[in-house]
Length: 103
Image (cartoon, rainbow, N blue to C red; front, side, top):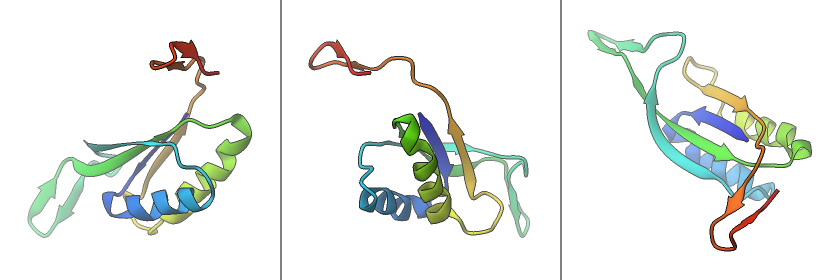
């Protein structure tokens, strides 16, 4: 599973890039968090937590590197807060409709 935490304004670009490459199944969640920079200060206002979007994508091992590359390239701005990508194994998946394991 790939969990990509990115800027909300880059979500459409990332999803479109994944779609063009043939990766269409994903889950999107609006989240709030902060990274190593511990928020952001704009003029006299300090924002402790910043809105982000998390994309969750389950993919075969041989597709993971390409998906990470697409997400990283299409979400890049070069500024603090561009995001993080986390990869973890999925041991089992279960389809509710068919009541069967899908892995």
